Image (cartoon, rainbow, N blue to C red; front, top):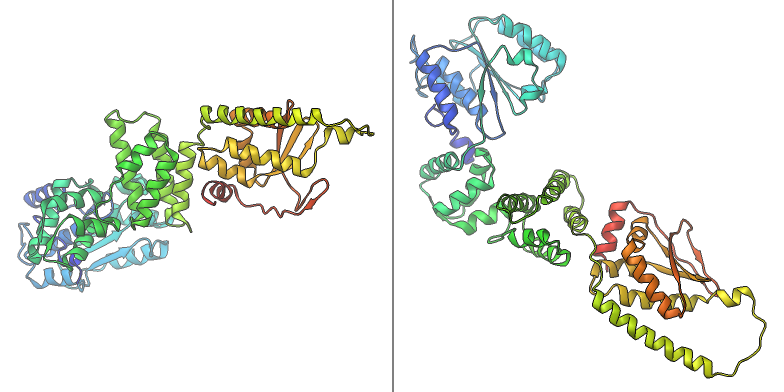
Length: 490
């Protein structure tokens, strides 16, 4: 038997949440049980366990006229604990949500209990019931038999009609505090006769985000491996890798350092860090930086973007790709280094002057020139010019250089260089104000006259170029894949 079932709370004192223990203690002291309770709160907080404790309290054979803790020894308590009590019916509303299921419940609730003192109905995930089923249940809650007790459980209170809520006594399950988590884990560890260092318990308490069930499941794994458990064992189960910290990745994102951020992400993936844990840890790290004033308010946009990725992670074929795209979108494509551009432009200008001087020294040959001969260069001229642009503009900018390598020179038409790309995302990046200005300055220096650059997305399956025919198949992909290819495929 796994530890979560083995150490499920059996008494009020064993319940994990302080507030819930107090509420049930007050019910016992008042010696008064309502006809319907609504247990609400996050998953794994102990709602179903509490419902079963309450069912034993009202049916324990040792509880006569005065209520007290269940003895867990009488036949009534034992049958409820074993799940064999015919008068305690547990219904999963996610699977039995229709009106016919509730009508059957209404018919059976009128019958007196077969063995126990009270007939108890525990309806889990009650918010999943249909509107018609809720209406049918409402009538039963308005006029319940004296021998019945309804315990409704839900993680989404806002989906339960107010008419149902108003007819139940609500018990609110809050998110567990680290102290409550450690208390629960300590009970399991003591029961197994094992030892876990306090630092590891504190880490586990924060990692499971208030879910007792998730925490005990993790303990079940690590305790089966060793009698003494430390941080490394807990970390390995929680995130798939020991010693990982999301802080370096968070720092790179705050500084918008694209290359560093992608490198840190790749290191985490190579080390086997679970992507879901990575995202949660990263969001918490960014939140802490924001609250401490180490990150700008704008970082909230990134946190929301990462949260959307986390939601889509379970259905994505490539979760790492989604995170990479979110990082690129946040960091943006960095502009090239101004000093390097000027240095390269100066070098290109020097080369151009040498070529012009050599051409001037050549004897002039009279020939009939057409307008096309004068203003249209060959394919090789255009490609050569474009390669020089790629080598200059894309320096020190891996992402931009990758996009440039995907573009294809078309032809030089008059004073304009035409460039073809596969995707509109590429065109937008190449033709933004800064990049276009750089392109035009450099191509002007290469050609020797003022030039413009025009970037087009080709809709044709092939591009016909002057003097040589080159067929290039252009396959349309969706924007997400095209952006990812531009950044991450060499």
